[in-house]
Image (tube, rainbow, N blue to C red; front, top):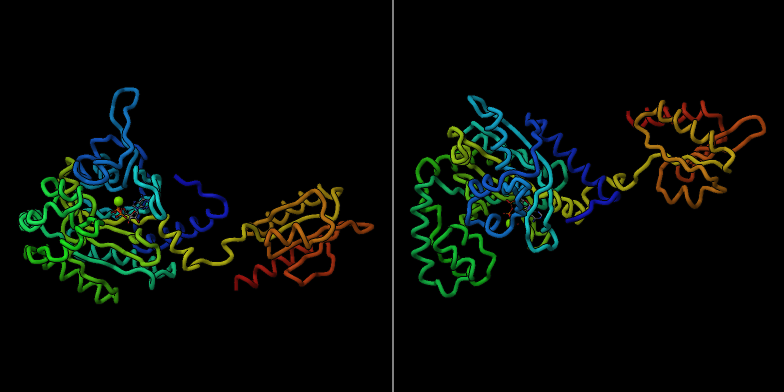
Length: 415
Ligand code: ATP
Ligand code: MG
Protein backbone atom coordinates (compact mmCIF):
# COMPACT_ATOMS: atom_id res chain seq x y z
CA UNK A 1 0.00 0.00 0.00
CA UNK A 2 1.52 3.24 -1.11
CA UNK A 3 1.56 6.82 0.03
CA UNK A 4 1.02 9.29 -2.76
CA UNK A 5 3.41 12.09 -1.87
CA UNK A 6 3.09 15.78 -2.77
CA UNK A 7 5.43 15.50 -5.75
CA UNK A 8 3.23 12.72 -7.17
CA UNK A 9 -0.24 14.08 -6.56
CA UNK A 10 -0.22 16.66 -9.39
CA UNK A 11 0.25 13.81 -11.87
CA UNK A 12 -2.65 11.93 -10.31
CA UNK A 13 -4.83 14.99 -10.52
CA UNK A 14 -3.80 15.58 -14.11
CA UNK A 15 -4.76 12.03 -15.02
CA UNK A 16 -8.03 12.19 -13.08
CA UNK A 17 -9.09 15.51 -14.56
CA UNK A 18 -8.31 14.30 -18.07
CA UNK A 19 -10.44 11.20 -17.47
CA UNK A 20 -13.25 13.34 -16.08
CA UNK A 21 -13.18 15.57 -19.13
CA UNK A 22 -13.30 12.66 -21.57
CA UNK A 23 -16.09 10.89 -19.66
CA UNK A 24 -18.03 14.15 -19.72
CA UNK A 25 -17.82 14.13 -23.51
CA UNK A 26 -19.68 10.81 -23.51
CA UNK A 27 -22.18 11.95 -20.84
CA UNK A 28 -21.19 9.45 -18.14
CA UNK A 29 -22.18 10.30 -14.55
CA UNK A 30 -20.04 9.68 -11.50
CA UNK A 31 -21.20 7.26 -8.81
CA UNK A 32 -19.37 7.15 -5.44
CA UNK A 33 -19.46 3.81 -3.73
CA UNK A 34 -18.47 2.43 -0.34
CA UNK A 35 -15.08 0.76 0.05
CA UNK A 36 -16.58 -2.10 2.08
CA UNK A 37 -19.32 -4.50 0.97
CA UNK A 38 -20.70 -7.78 2.23
CA UNK A 39 -18.33 -10.62 1.36
CA UNK A 40 -21.22 -12.50 -0.20
CA UNK A 41 -21.53 -9.88 -2.95
CA UNK A 42 -18.02 -10.56 -4.25
CA UNK A 43 -18.32 -14.32 -3.95
CA UNK A 44 -21.52 -14.28 -5.97
CA UNK A 45 -20.32 -11.89 -8.66
CA UNK A 46 -16.60 -12.43 -9.17
CA UNK A 47 -16.91 -16.19 -8.68
CA UNK A 48 -15.79 -18.60 -5.96
CA UNK A 49 -12.99 -20.14 -7.97
CA UNK A 50 -11.21 -17.01 -9.17
CA UNK A 51 -7.84 -15.76 -7.93
CA UNK A 52 -9.52 -12.80 -6.32
CA UNK A 53 -12.03 -14.71 -4.21
CA UNK A 54 -9.78 -17.70 -3.56
CA UNK A 55 -6.81 -15.83 -2.21
CA UNK A 56 -6.80 -12.09 -2.66
CA UNK A 57 -9.63 -10.61 -0.60
CA UNK A 58 -9.26 -8.66 2.63
CA UNK A 59 -12.15 -10.20 4.54
CA UNK A 60 -13.07 -9.69 8.18
CA UNK A 61 -15.99 -10.05 10.54
CA UNK A 62 -17.42 -6.87 11.98
CA UNK A 63 -18.65 -6.55 15.57
CA UNK A 64 -21.92 -8.08 14.54
CA UNK A 65 -20.18 -11.18 13.13
CA UNK A 66 -21.08 -10.15 9.60
CA UNK A 67 -18.46 -11.00 6.98
CA UNK A 68 -17.30 -7.89 5.13
CA UNK A 69 -14.66 -7.37 2.46
CA UNK A 70 -12.60 -4.41 1.28
CA UNK A 71 -13.68 -4.17 -2.34
CA UNK A 72 -11.24 -5.87 -4.73
CA UNK A 73 -12.95 -4.25 -7.76
CA UNK A 74 -15.78 -1.85 -8.50
CA UNK A 75 -18.28 -3.59 -10.74
CA UNK A 76 -20.02 -5.70 -8.08
CA UNK A 77 -20.60 -2.70 -5.81
CA UNK A 78 -21.79 -0.63 -8.74
CA UNK A 79 -24.39 -3.25 -9.68
CA UNK A 80 -25.43 -3.57 -6.04
CA UNK A 81 -25.91 0.19 -5.69
CA UNK A 82 -27.64 0.67 -9.04
CA UNK A 83 -30.06 -2.15 -8.23
CA UNK A 84 -30.66 -0.99 -4.67
CA UNK A 85 -31.58 2.53 -5.82
CA UNK A 86 -33.69 1.51 -8.78
CA UNK A 87 -31.29 2.99 -11.33
CA UNK A 88 -31.68 0.04 -13.65
CA UNK A 89 -35.45 -0.08 -13.77
CA UNK A 90 -36.63 0.67 -17.32
CA UNK A 91 -33.75 2.97 -18.04
CA UNK A 92 -30.23 3.06 -19.33
CA UNK A 93 -27.30 4.25 -17.23
CA UNK A 94 -23.83 5.41 -18.11
CA UNK A 95 -21.81 5.48 -14.90
CA UNK A 96 -18.21 5.84 -13.79
CA UNK A 97 -16.43 5.53 -10.46
CA UNK A 98 -12.94 5.87 -9.06
CA UNK A 99 -11.18 4.88 -5.90
CA UNK A 100 -9.00 2.41 -4.05
CA UNK A 101 -9.34 -1.36 -4.46
CA UNK A 102 -7.73 -4.00 -2.25
CA UNK A 103 -6.19 -7.33 -3.18
CA UNK A 104 -3.81 -9.44 -1.15
CA UNK A 105 -1.32 -10.05 -3.99
CA UNK A 106 2.42 -10.38 -4.16
CA UNK A 107 3.50 -6.74 -4.39
CA UNK A 108 5.76 -5.80 -7.32
CA UNK A 109 6.08 -2.99 -9.80
CA UNK A 110 2.58 -2.21 -11.07
CA UNK A 111 0.94 -4.60 -8.59
CA UNK A 112 -0.01 -3.38 -5.14
CA UNK A 113 -2.32 -4.37 -2.31
CA UNK A 114 -4.13 -1.08 -2.29
CA UNK A 115 -4.37 0.24 -5.82
CA UNK A 116 -6.71 2.57 -7.64
CA UNK A 117 -9.08 2.05 -10.48
CA UNK A 118 -11.20 4.31 -12.58
CA UNK A 119 -14.08 2.30 -13.97
CA UNK A 120 -16.92 2.78 -16.42
CA UNK A 121 -20.18 0.79 -16.49
CA UNK A 122 -23.05 1.08 -18.98
CA UNK A 123 -26.38 -0.64 -18.23
CA UNK A 124 -29.48 -1.47 -20.19
CA UNK A 125 -27.92 -1.49 -23.66
CA UNK A 126 -27.27 -4.79 -25.37
CA UNK A 127 -25.99 -3.61 -28.75
CA UNK A 128 -22.43 -3.68 -30.00
CA UNK A 129 -22.58 0.12 -30.32
CA UNK A 130 -22.21 0.47 -26.56
CA UNK A 131 -19.28 -1.98 -26.46
CA UNK A 132 -17.75 0.25 -29.11
CA UNK A 133 -18.55 3.36 -27.09
CA UNK A 134 -16.72 2.25 -23.94
CA UNK A 135 -13.74 1.25 -26.06
CA UNK A 136 -13.86 4.66 -27.77
CA UNK A 137 -13.89 6.35 -24.35
CA UNK A 138 -10.65 4.59 -23.48
CA UNK A 139 -9.10 5.19 -26.91
CA UNK A 140 -9.87 8.90 -26.69
CA UNK A 141 -8.34 8.99 -23.24
CA UNK A 142 -5.05 7.50 -24.49
CA UNK A 143 -5.07 10.08 -27.23
CA UNK A 144 -5.62 12.95 -24.79
CA UNK A 145 -2.87 11.65 -22.52
CA UNK A 146 -0.41 11.16 -25.37
CA UNK A 147 -0.33 7.39 -24.77
CA UNK A 148 -2.02 6.27 -27.98
CA UNK A 149 1.20 4.87 -29.44
CA UNK A 150 2.14 3.05 -26.26
CA UNK A 151 -0.93 0.84 -25.88
CA UNK A 152 -2.61 -1.75 -28.08
CA UNK A 153 -6.12 -3.12 -27.93
CA UNK A 154 -6.70 -6.85 -27.59
CA UNK A 155 -10.18 -8.07 -28.31
CA UNK A 156 -12.08 -11.33 -28.02
CA UNK A 157 -15.57 -12.70 -27.70
CA UNK A 158 -16.43 -15.20 -24.97
CA UNK A 159 -19.78 -16.00 -26.60
CA UNK A 160 -22.95 -17.11 -24.87
CA UNK A 161 -23.06 -19.36 -21.80
CA UNK A 162 -23.94 -22.32 -24.04
CA UNK A 163 -21.06 -21.64 -26.41
CA UNK A 164 -18.69 -21.34 -23.50
CA UNK A 165 -19.75 -24.62 -21.94
CA UNK A 166 -19.31 -26.43 -25.26
CA UNK A 167 -15.87 -24.94 -25.53
CA UNK A 168 -15.12 -25.77 -21.91
CA UNK A 169 -15.61 -29.48 -22.47
CA UNK A 170 -13.41 -29.39 -25.57
CA UNK A 171 -10.71 -27.55 -23.62
CA UNK A 172 -10.91 -29.97 -20.69
CA UNK A 173 -10.68 -32.95 -23.07
CA UNK A 174 -7.56 -31.48 -24.63
CA UNK A 175 -5.86 -30.37 -21.40
CA UNK A 176 -6.60 -33.63 -19.57
CA UNK A 177 -4.07 -35.26 -21.89
CA UNK A 178 -1.39 -32.98 -20.41
CA UNK A 179 -2.64 -32.88 -16.82
CA UNK A 180 0.72 -33.77 -15.22
CA UNK A 181 2.56 -31.06 -17.12
CA UNK A 182 0.25 -28.22 -16.12
CA UNK A 183 1.14 -25.87 -13.26
CA UNK A 184 -0.50 -26.60 -9.94
CA UNK A 185 -3.19 -23.91 -10.15
CA UNK A 186 -4.16 -25.01 -13.64
CA UNK A 187 -4.43 -28.66 -12.58
CA UNK A 188 -6.86 -27.63 -9.91
CA UNK A 189 -8.79 -25.42 -12.32
CA UNK A 190 -9.21 -28.26 -14.78
CA UNK A 191 -12.22 -29.31 -12.73
CA UNK A 192 -13.21 -26.02 -11.08
CA UNK A 193 -12.74 -23.27 -13.71
CA UNK A 194 -10.99 -24.51 -16.87
CA UNK A 195 -11.38 -21.24 -18.85
CA UNK A 196 -9.13 -19.48 -16.38
CA UNK A 197 -6.30 -21.78 -17.39
CA UNK A 198 -6.11 -19.72 -20.60
CA UNK A 199 -4.97 -16.83 -18.42
CA UNK A 200 -2.14 -18.82 -16.79
CA UNK A 201 1.21 -17.03 -16.67
CA UNK A 202 3.10 -20.34 -16.32
CA UNK A 203 5.42 -20.88 -19.27
CA UNK A 204 4.93 -24.62 -19.68
CA UNK A 205 1.18 -24.29 -19.42
CA UNK A 206 1.29 -21.57 -22.06
CA UNK A 207 3.17 -23.86 -24.42
CA UNK A 208 0.53 -26.53 -24.00
CA UNK A 209 -2.18 -23.92 -24.56
CA UNK A 210 -0.68 -22.89 -27.88
CA UNK A 211 -2.16 -26.02 -29.48
CA UNK A 212 -5.45 -25.99 -27.55
CA UNK A 213 -8.83 -25.57 -29.25
CA UNK A 214 -9.88 -21.92 -29.57
CA UNK A 215 -13.08 -20.39 -28.29
CA UNK A 216 -13.71 -18.60 -31.58
CA UNK A 217 -14.56 -21.91 -33.24
CA UNK A 218 -17.36 -22.50 -30.73
CA UNK A 219 -19.08 -19.13 -30.83
CA UNK A 220 -22.86 -18.97 -31.29
CA UNK A 221 -24.26 -17.00 -34.23
CA UNK A 222 -25.52 -14.11 -32.14
CA UNK A 223 -22.16 -13.56 -30.45
CA UNK A 224 -20.41 -13.87 -33.79
CA UNK A 225 -22.61 -11.19 -35.27
CA UNK A 226 -22.25 -8.95 -32.21
CA UNK A 227 -18.49 -9.24 -32.48
CA UNK A 228 -18.51 -8.49 -36.21
CA UNK A 229 -20.64 -5.38 -35.63
CA UNK A 230 -18.28 -4.21 -32.89
CA UNK A 231 -15.28 -4.69 -35.16
CA UNK A 232 -17.10 -2.67 -37.82
CA UNK A 233 -17.62 0.25 -35.42
CA UNK A 234 -13.97 0.18 -34.39
CA UNK A 235 -12.76 -0.02 -38.00
CA UNK A 236 -14.87 2.96 -38.93
CA UNK A 237 -13.52 4.93 -35.94
CA UNK A 238 -9.96 4.06 -36.96
CA UNK A 239 -9.29 2.20 -33.70
CA UNK A 240 -6.79 -0.59 -34.31
CA UNK A 241 -7.21 -3.89 -32.46
CA UNK A 242 -5.82 -7.36 -32.39
CA UNK A 243 -8.22 -10.28 -32.07
CA UNK A 244 -6.76 -12.54 -29.39
CA UNK A 245 -8.78 -15.78 -29.18
CA UNK A 246 -7.06 -16.69 -25.89
CA UNK A 247 -8.04 -13.53 -24.08
CA UNK A 248 -10.22 -14.33 -21.08
CA UNK A 249 -10.73 -12.22 -18.00
CA UNK A 250 -9.92 -13.06 -14.41
CA UNK A 251 -13.52 -12.66 -13.28
CA UNK A 252 -16.40 -15.01 -13.96
CA UNK A 253 -19.09 -12.59 -15.00
CA UNK A 254 -18.03 -11.73 -18.56
CA UNK A 255 -19.78 -12.85 -21.77
CA UNK A 256 -19.46 -11.85 -25.43
CA UNK A 257 -16.98 -8.95 -25.71
CA UNK A 258 -13.81 -8.85 -23.61
CA UNK A 259 -10.90 -6.48 -24.17
CA UNK A 260 -7.64 -5.31 -22.70
CA UNK A 261 -5.35 -2.39 -23.43
CA UNK A 262 -1.77 -3.54 -23.01
CA UNK A 263 1.63 -1.88 -23.12
CA UNK A 264 5.17 -3.19 -23.53
CA UNK A 265 6.61 -0.40 -21.40
CA UNK A 266 5.88 -1.80 -17.95
CA UNK A 267 7.28 -5.32 -18.00
CA UNK A 268 5.04 -8.12 -16.81
CA UNK A 269 2.28 -5.83 -15.53
CA UNK A 270 1.34 -4.70 -19.01
CA UNK A 271 -2.44 -4.46 -18.81
CA UNK A 272 -3.50 -0.90 -18.08
CA UNK A 273 -7.21 -1.24 -18.75
CA UNK A 274 -9.53 -4.22 -19.02
CA UNK A 275 -13.20 -4.87 -19.43
CA UNK A 276 -16.03 -6.40 -21.34
CA UNK A 277 -19.68 -7.31 -21.44
CA UNK A 278 -21.39 -8.91 -18.45
CA UNK A 279 -25.04 -9.35 -19.39
CA UNK A 280 -25.70 -12.03 -16.77
CA UNK A 281 -24.44 -10.30 -13.64
CA UNK A 282 -27.37 -8.06 -12.70
CA UNK A 283 -29.74 -11.01 -12.88
CA UNK A 284 -27.31 -13.23 -11.03
CA UNK A 285 -27.26 -10.68 -8.19
CA UNK A 286 -31.04 -10.65 -7.95
CA UNK A 287 -32.04 -7.94 -10.45
CA UNK A 288 -33.94 -8.25 -13.72
CA UNK A 289 -31.87 -9.40 -16.69
CA UNK A 290 -29.98 -6.25 -17.74
CA UNK A 291 -27.29 -6.04 -20.40
CA UNK A 292 -24.12 -4.38 -19.15
CA UNK A 293 -20.65 -3.51 -20.35
CA UNK A 294 -17.73 -1.77 -18.68
CA UNK A 295 -14.03 -1.54 -17.99
CA UNK A 296 -11.61 -0.61 -15.25
CA UNK A 297 -8.21 0.97 -15.63
CA UNK A 298 -5.33 0.69 -13.22
CA UNK A 299 -4.36 4.21 -12.19
CA UNK A 300 -0.91 3.27 -10.81
CA UNK A 301 0.04 1.56 -14.07
CA UNK A 302 -1.12 4.57 -16.08
CA UNK A 303 0.90 6.87 -13.84
CA UNK A 304 3.97 4.62 -14.34
CA UNK A 305 3.38 4.79 -18.08
CA UNK A 306 2.99 8.59 -18.12
CA UNK A 307 6.25 8.83 -16.18
CA UNK A 308 8.13 6.31 -18.30
CA UNK A 309 7.20 8.18 -21.47
CA UNK A 310 7.37 11.63 -19.84
CA UNK A 311 3.90 12.27 -21.16
CA UNK A 312 2.81 15.18 -18.99
CA UNK A 313 3.15 18.97 -19.01
CA UNK A 314 6.46 19.97 -17.38
CA UNK A 315 4.63 22.65 -15.38
CA UNK A 316 2.93 19.89 -13.36
CA UNK A 317 6.07 19.52 -11.31
CA UNK A 318 6.05 23.17 -10.21
CA UNK A 319 3.71 23.56 -7.28
CA UNK A 320 3.47 27.37 -7.39
CA UNK A 321 3.43 30.28 -9.83
CA UNK A 322 4.66 33.12 -7.69
CA UNK A 323 7.06 33.23 -4.76
CA UNK A 324 6.78 36.35 -2.62
CA UNK A 325 9.43 37.39 -0.09
CA UNK A 326 10.91 40.53 1.49
CA UNK A 327 14.44 41.68 2.09
CA UNK A 328 14.07 41.53 5.84
CA UNK A 329 11.73 40.22 8.52
CA UNK A 330 10.40 43.71 9.31
CA UNK A 331 8.24 43.58 6.17
CA UNK A 332 6.36 40.47 7.25
CA UNK A 333 3.00 42.26 7.49
CA UNK A 334 3.49 43.70 3.99
CA UNK A 335 4.25 40.27 2.55
CA UNK A 336 1.15 38.72 4.12
CA UNK A 337 -1.09 41.60 3.03
CA UNK A 338 0.23 41.78 -0.55
CA UNK A 339 -0.17 38.02 -0.97
CA UNK A 340 -3.84 38.32 -0.08
CA UNK A 341 -4.26 41.22 -2.51
CA UNK A 342 -2.69 39.13 -5.24
CA UNK A 343 -5.00 36.22 -4.48
CA UNK A 344 -8.01 38.53 -4.65
CA UNK A 345 -6.96 40.07 -7.94
CA UNK A 346 -5.64 36.90 -9.59
CA UNK A 347 -7.55 33.89 -8.27
CA UNK A 348 -5.76 31.45 -10.60
CA UNK A 349 -2.32 32.39 -9.33
CA UNK A 350 -0.67 30.00 -6.86
CA UNK A 351 1.15 32.27 -4.43
CA UNK A 352 3.62 31.11 -1.80
CA UNK A 353 5.08 33.50 0.77
CA UNK A 354 8.31 33.54 2.71
CA UNK A 355 8.34 35.84 5.73
CA UNK A 356 11.67 35.44 7.42
CA UNK A 357 13.67 37.77 5.20
CA UNK A 358 15.70 37.04 2.10
CA UNK A 359 18.88 38.89 1.10
CA UNK A 360 19.00 37.80 -2.52
CA UNK A 361 16.75 35.76 -4.73
CA UNK A 362 19.42 33.37 -5.91
CA UNK A 363 18.91 30.73 -3.30
CA UNK A 364 15.58 30.06 -1.68
CA UNK A 365 13.36 31.74 -4.26
CA UNK A 366 15.03 30.08 -7.25
CA UNK A 367 14.90 26.68 -5.60
CA UNK A 368 11.11 26.80 -5.49
CA UNK A 369 11.07 26.73 -9.29
CA UNK A 370 8.44 29.49 -9.33
CA UNK A 371 8.36 31.22 -12.72
CA UNK A 372 7.53 34.51 -10.99
CA UNK A 373 9.41 35.88 -7.99
CA UNK A 374 8.55 39.08 -6.16
CA UNK A 375 10.92 40.66 -3.67
CA UNK A 376 9.76 43.53 -1.40
CA UNK A 377 12.05 46.18 -0.03
CA UNK A 378 11.62 49.29 2.06
CA UNK A 379 12.11 52.47 0.05
CA UNK A 380 12.32 55.60 2.23
CA UNK A 381 8.58 56.39 1.85
CA UNK A 382 6.95 53.14 0.80
CA UNK A 383 7.40 49.43 0.22
CA UNK A 384 8.36 48.58 -3.37
CA UNK A 385 8.21 45.30 -5.24
CA UNK A 386 10.64 43.95 -7.80
CA UNK A 387 9.28 41.31 -10.15
CA UNK A 388 11.56 38.65 -11.58
CA UNK A 389 10.57 36.56 -14.59
CA UNK A 390 13.53 34.27 -14.94
CA UNK A 391 16.53 36.56 -15.39
CA UNK A 392 14.39 39.49 -16.43
CA UNK A 393 14.00 42.00 -13.63
CA UNK A 394 11.53 44.90 -13.38
CA UNK A 395 12.06 48.33 -11.85
CA UNK A 396 10.89 48.48 -8.21
CA UNK A 397 7.19 49.44 -8.18
CA UNK A 398 4.33 49.92 -5.76
CA UNK A 399 1.83 47.12 -5.08
CA UNK A 400 -0.87 48.49 -7.41
CA UNK A 401 1.54 48.59 -10.35
CA UNK A 402 2.70 45.06 -9.60
CA UNK A 403 -0.85 43.74 -9.67
CA UNK A 404 -1.49 45.53 -12.94
CA UNK A 405 1.66 44.07 -14.48
CA UNK A 406 0.67 40.55 -13.39
CA UNK A 407 -2.86 40.99 -14.69
CA UNK A 408 -1.46 42.05 -18.04
CA UNK A 409 0.80 38.99 -18.09
CA UNK A 410 -2.14 36.73 -17.30
CA UNK A 411 -4.30 38.22 -20.04
CA UNK A 412 -1.44 37.82 -22.51
CA UNK A 413 -0.96 34.18 -21.47
CA UNK A 414 -4.63 33.42 -21.85
CA UNK A 415 -4.93 34.89 -25.33
P1 ATP B 1 -3.76 -8.78 -13.83
O1 ATP B 1 -3.93 -9.81 -14.91
O2 ATP B 1 -2.69 -7.76 -14.12
O3 ATP B 1 -3.68 -9.37 -12.45
P2 ATP B 1 -6.57 -8.43 -13.42
O4 ATP B 1 -7.19 -9.21 -14.51
O5 ATP B 1 -6.51 -9.00 -12.06
O6 ATP B 1 -5.12 -7.93 -13.86
P3 ATP B 1 -8.73 -6.49 -13.35
O7 ATP B 1 -9.40 -7.09 -12.19
O8 ATP B 1 -9.32 -6.63 -14.68
O9 ATP B 1 -7.20 -6.97 -13.37
O10 ATP B 1 -8.46 -4.93 -13.04
C1 ATP B 1 -8.37 -3.96 -14.08
C2 ATP B 1 -7.05 -3.25 -14.05
O11 ATP B 1 -6.70 -2.84 -12.75
C3 ATP B 1 -5.87 -4.11 -14.48
O12 ATP B 1 -5.79 -4.16 -15.85
C4 ATP B 1 -4.71 -3.36 -13.87
O13 ATP B 1 -4.37 -2.24 -14.67
C5 ATP B 1 -5.29 -2.87 -12.58
N1 ATP B 1 -4.90 -3.75 -11.46
C6 ATP B 1 -5.44 -4.95 -11.13
N2 ATP B 1 -4.84 -5.45 -10.03
C7 ATP B 1 -3.91 -4.53 -9.65
C8 ATP B 1 -2.98 -4.45 -8.56
N3 ATP B 1 -2.90 -5.37 -7.63
N4 ATP B 1 -2.17 -3.35 -8.49
C9 ATP B 1 -2.27 -2.36 -9.41
N5 ATP B 1 -3.13 -2.37 -10.45
C10 ATP B 1 -3.95 -3.44 -10.57
MG1 MG C 1 -5.04 -10.03 -10.98
